[in-house]
Image 1 (cartoon, rainbow, N blue to C red):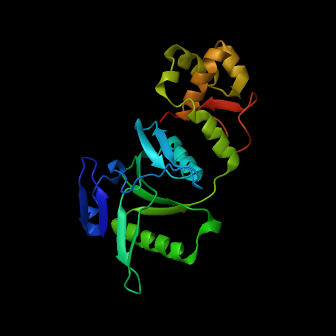
Image 2 (tube, rainbow, N blue to C red):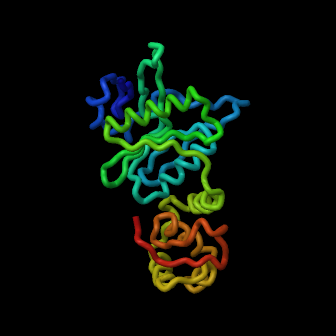
Image 3 (cartoon, rainbow, N blue to C red):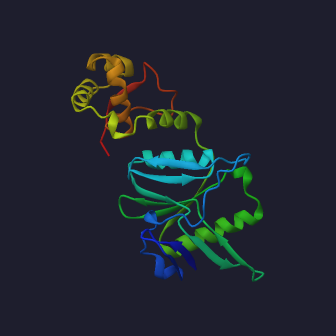
Length: 234
């Protein structure tokens, strides 16, 4: 059984097969995010550049996974806390779980995401994730339980995310950058050839966020000598 808030408002509850066609990527969160002082976790809202909306998160790790989904060219839209999944356990007790995210890919397929590090999954939570995975299989969705992320990748994408907004787009600089990096160059060398670095670098990072320029984001921190080349825009 699923219980959720539709994008246009109003609570709905129905058996899982009847809900498979719902646009859960547009659903409203089924529970509020807590911002109380002193909590161990940190809640907030991420500006999801892909859709121009804000998506909630409840920890720094959730935020980083949300950021990577925003960076992923295969992801079209994401919602947080998209529904309550309700069931009864082996003892007959009523249980419920709200997955962290629902993501819609550009090919129309969907993935339900729960964020939890490997060393923080007691037996009771492992059961929750197993039930959620089974429910997702019945619905035709993929289920992923994700944990810690490569620190270098996270740091590099976090840097690029600062330039994800369209205000960083300067058309005349874009043309120069795409020409300069067509054969691949060091980041600073190419930026200098394209114009004044103070003006060029925000545009360069914006293009890297959108995949028009690409680099190895796992081999080390982005720097002056990072090899950058043209890629396929999202």
